Length: 312
Image 1 (tube, helix red, strand yellow):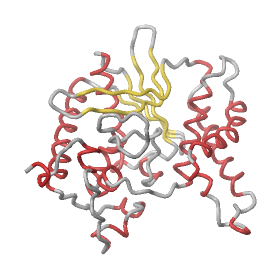
Image 2 (spheres, rainbow, N blue to C red):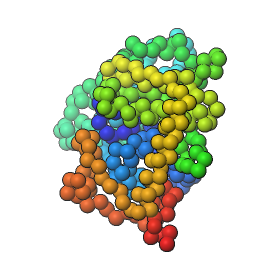
Image 3 (tube, rainbow, N blue to C red):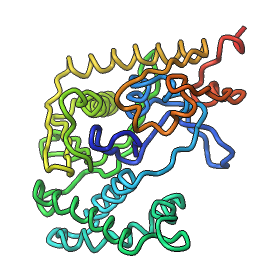
């Protein structure tokens, strides 16, 4: 989930990033670029560095956690047979899904800690927050009837290697495929529809997915659909080949800039209105801070790029 202003950019599906390398024994994946991290670099190269290379922790936000919860419920809702995909059934799933998410991500348990007696959550705060998730689900049911849909894929991992370019990777919330093979890519946003000046990042994300699917499957998706549950709006776009080629060129240019920053060590901060939601202001030169030293070998491990000093 993104930790940027949820009302401006919505919330993402569970985030897929340039793959970091830690001490976990799990299999390491090749470094790749996701739409979220691409948007990070376009917003602020230093933010990209902090998230991808330094892997600095960020406190979970209630809005982002609620977005993850709603995404989880909507994914699992389609496990139920047609006729049982009701609002009541979806809302009944909320407490159990929240328990499951807390087990998977222990940091979520701290969202409400410290506000009540002896560090406990204030009475009713968690319930009110869960009801907020239920309200977002209620909005979803005003926009779509899940009993009339049979998604081809949910939480679908997508990946493609651009020729002479980066590996692209992401997770699509839902893919619908019509009997004639036409594809519709659906992304849920639990924030409100962004103002026009902030719509670019969301549209870039969807066209990014459209590009990856085109390269994977050889077919351009018929529809890209953003479902904003914060205000019940749906944004739709029918991508043309020229649109996706333009995104591919944008991604190539962006990757060139990332490569240059990684080799030179110059991760320039960029001050924008979104800085108010950044968890790293204390380390940002724009706010009087000093970035930490980059861990040895981190750039090569996370980006597959050798810094100039290491390459010489």
